[in-house]
Image (cartoon, rainbow, N blue to C red; front, side):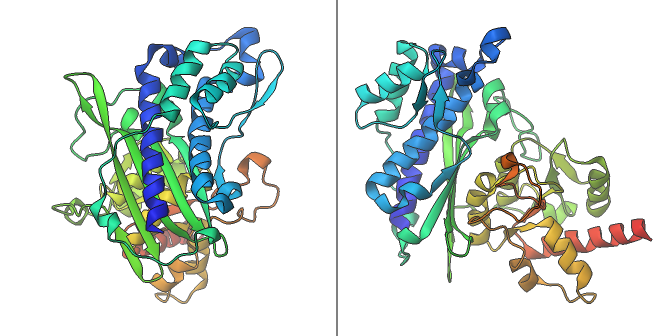
Length: 395
């Protein structure tokens, strides 16, 4: 298992390098931010260059994992289809080829003959990246049948932030970046195909630290393993727990339902933070910048949460289905709903949530909303107080 995580860690750094290079190379960056209008806007290929960047990262990981673990080839899952149609009407399946030249030729077709962009992309994809050995990970010994797992990938979570950039300035006092490149993350999560439970995950933040001297970015990687009695991660314990000093805090989406925002303001005594990117909001909970990320609706997906969920589990936390948690607490005798009950409402990753009438695009949504937390008592307090608020509204 540790060897698989080591492989995925290496591949996440290749993906992060690709994400950084696309923004650094003018030829590629111009394609990334190009505004499609009129007839060009309706062409199928141009669901945009960002989609191609996503697919390339997705297929890079699939290609390399399949080489070392052939049985996992059909179990590397992601958001994007790897089929593109160029302006000549040709449908092309995007896949990393065995050689740089072969990959370049395929990408030239996808990019409507833009050989320069294709050559740059192929060069980045086939170039190795230097990584230092993770000494902690090297000590992990876990007996897991790799053939029993699946992998969810979100190649670049935080699309809008990645395209529009920013975030080079100092962080606010609370440590939460409100907008910009630090919110763009590479997420890779591994789950048990039988139970759906997350086993290990990694978050690669390509744009973690900005160097204004040479206008460059450096990244960082977080990882965690939670399997049977083993829970291990590379998360540093903060010097102080600011949440204990200021009361409970949560991070939410700016597009959250107003009534739910109001309820969470009541629960936290107005200690609600806002930022973008589903993965980044869970990252804030992992790093204890907030106590929890709370979402009332099914606007996140399995590829958004599998990786950070694994890390939270390794820390003693988790991600529960908000709707199931509220129902469970409401139906339980007062005061009896506890940590054990949270385990039955953890998000699962091996099958879609059972939602009648869900559209195809919502197939893999976390339909019931969610609470992502490091401390179980935080999730229980949020559920308890939301039940009280809901009860008073209904009364």
